[in-house]
Length: 349
Image (cartoon, rainbow, N blue to C red; front, side, top):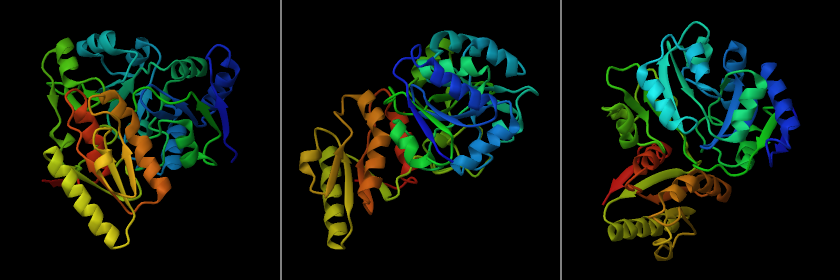
């Protein structure tokens, strides 16, 4: 299969390209497209065979639910068994935007889309290309990240092409995404709404709108053996090809430990990558040292994370050592991705 890549500079001027992509969605095919978080791999959420094609293209376990992307609140009403009042409040506050809500599904949503669950994850993206694609297709679009399962999520169309060329007919290239980590997921079917995946919309922001929320304890623990209710809860995600180890502690101790580990690995003939910040990279002596940006720039760190992991893949390093990023606002979301990418390998110094 030949994969067509269309650069979308302006949704109005490039509407014909988006319509071509919409035709593919309508016919049950797959299209990769930009959202404000990461690139998504989309198909008609209400066609069981279309959802199956997503799992096949990604090599994704079929019990890992897909997120349904919509363009208007009425679409949520259309596929939900009931719409909790909290969903209306959160939608008013954060949609379109990087928030996914889990509600009980009705019979319109096939189990192939929900990973066999009676719940469905739904969000309304804010990226103009994503919204226009949903509108033009006339479909609700199921879309996980547009990477092969387990790899770092794509934040550029080039990343999608690395993983998906020859597997899907079209990629809409909207340039670099704005946020760089996946949406926050909140489960509204619980008595107290529960965050299943942290993201740009924080626990504090959600609580301001709907009152008490709680954080799933599995966010900071090793992967659960239970059936996942939301994307990313069970399986190793976001992972580079090399072994990734996080080093946590006081900054100087972390830097000293990373340098000692680097010396040891290089003595063994291993190629080492190091993830630091603008403030620390000059102090490391690994072969490949990459900065996530300034530590005070949380948005920049989130936006650079997956690109950096992919750069280490291109460099074919054997092991990666990374500083911890427990930043004040979205540090939990950043660390959630790093912990999963590292398979929860953490050294505390």
